[in-house]
Amino acid sequence: MNCGNLLFRALSSLVALAPSFAAAADRPNIVIIVGDDMGYADVGFNGSKEIPTPHLDALAAAGTKFTNGYVSGPYCSPTRAGLLTGRYQTRFGHEFNPSAAKSAGLPLSERTIADRLRGAGYRTGLVGKWHLGSSPDRHPNSRGFDEFFGFIAGAHPYLPGQGPPIFRNREAVKETEYLTDALGREAVAFIDRHQKEPFFLYLAFNAVHTPMEAQEERMAKFAHIKDTKRRQYAAMMAAMDDAIGGVLAELDKTGLSDNTLVFFFSDNGGPTMATTATNGSINAPLRGSKRTTLEGGVRVPFLAKWPGKIPAGKSYDLPIIQLDATRTALVAGGADQADDKTLEGVDLLPHLTGKNAEAPHEALFWRFGEQMAVRKGDWKLVKYDPVVDGGKKGATDLRLYNLASDLSEEKNLIAEEPEKAKELHAAWDEWNKSNVPPLWGQNEGKAEAKNKKGKAKRRATAAAAE
Image (tube, rainbow, N blue to C red):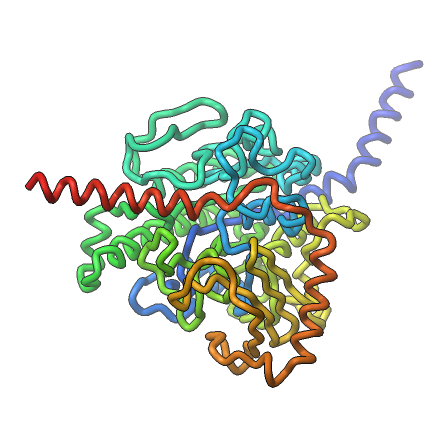
């Protein structure tokens, strides 16, 4: 074959590839930011006056706030499993936080959003909390993430030199900064390194999960808050807001803001009931707590921003769930497969732009051990942990609430609306047919109780020694 023919074939190949190159250039960068154990009332865009969150408020002003934004579980790891797979985690047994067993964690049968986006040409990175398994084959670098900086377990101290290792990929590193600041630093560095290629960044803060460890200089800004735990919480929230501000500033600095899809939400509601490791959060006007299927456990602060694609300064009031963030990102990134029936979220863009005026979901569902819930329209049928009401652990009988008139879930209407309760229960039963038994038991509650008992014993010992 002569040189002319070779040159012709090479040029023809480039012409054939040109549309795909253009498509790749048009795809957005994707940043999903997750807070940990945040109170619904503790952000400015939800009305907080006590804890300023200027950077999150700016994100809300530049994008859309979801007033009925939910997560698929009231617990840290299950919500993350749902986010990464785009599926209700009860479909594959990730109902509770993983046990200490090496085999526990996000099942290897599940494809992650990082797997899918990397396959579509994205550079993928996780900064922060993993909490989806500790075995080598469940490590973030084995689950689709090119780069990882953070920790493997469900909680970690914030002050340097404490707790389990911080990892860069699979190598333990020495970290000298306050952890929330370090996570913000690493997220900024990831964006800087990959500004010339499409990237997916999953920024998973452990703030404001216990332990309550805040810097004195940030604590001083909240001297007006007399309760020590609440003051620590406020300082930890401020640190996370500052870190998010740094990420948003880096997107502006690199000229990437206009072509970056950003989601932000908390992994569950604030832990406010006695059997949780409380952090000083407030979920009002919602009732309930982390580890319950009441609104306070599963309705969370939730934002999305993509200039020119998602309306700015708007509120979207129909119910959505974090599984939708997964599907929306996959569609935007060209990694969605419409015939993949495992994905259960929906692409939110047509709903946010008004092209589709229908509700994204006919109903949303939850199963968490003995607890359950289904929301259909304004109606919610729920069994929840009675510890919220001062009772014993387990689950209540069925309760029916109309959230349009009773956001705090205080007036049980099941006696007045038995047919509505039957309708919702039938929908939940049908959904539940596709769930599987939990792969492991509900362990974190025991761990939290043991931790609280140990702390109380240490305090008593210290007091006796004084």
